[in-house]
Length: 148
Image (cartoon, rainbow, N blue to C red):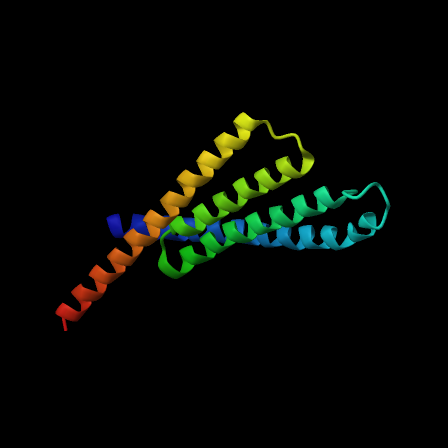
């Protein structure tokens, strides 16, 4: 009974993650097409920054989507969500917000400090997750060698 429930759960999760990956791929394709179409807007002369902030924001948003899709694709290889990929997406998102806020000159010092602290914590979590992953892999390799 438990094995059947686990198999059903695995199938449902695979379908759900597969659907999300398809939607993210469609969103990335649409985003890239819109990015290409928006290049003509960059040629309009509206000061030095012009429409560049929108262009930069769109590029960074595509980076976030790519990182999120990487975490889901990794699930199909290892049947685990790797924390490093999720943290990579979070780091890129925070950097995106920092760059946009700094570029628009509307980032308050308190928000800059908060985002910087949050970025530091996420970076520390990412480093810790890599260390734990490497230790776990080393332990797994040791166990595999011992069973031979």
